[in-house]
Length: 140
Image (cartoon, rainbow, N blue to C red):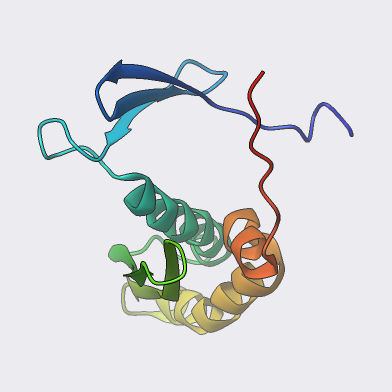
């Protein structure tokens, strides 16, 4: 596998049920089920990753035409526990507004195509979930 294609993060336990994730560029984010109550849970980070990945795609495609007045994405799903924990009914909703005028009109027209392209080919995160990529877990 091409090393340029390989991605990774490192998690370190900071306290019971709480971890800090670090990327190779030094960025960090804390996550956990406990802590002070404001931490993102792993499921919330999954939803954020799906929405963020698609949001970046849609932003790149549409914002070339006009800067959005507002750009909000909501990702949601249902956590199921029967038969093993998992998420179902994942939905990503885009609320994007562009200014009036020809540039805004051009950007608005691109939103549906941008969302479709993201879902079908561009967004690595949602495509990985959709395709059901196996996850290997091992102790080293």
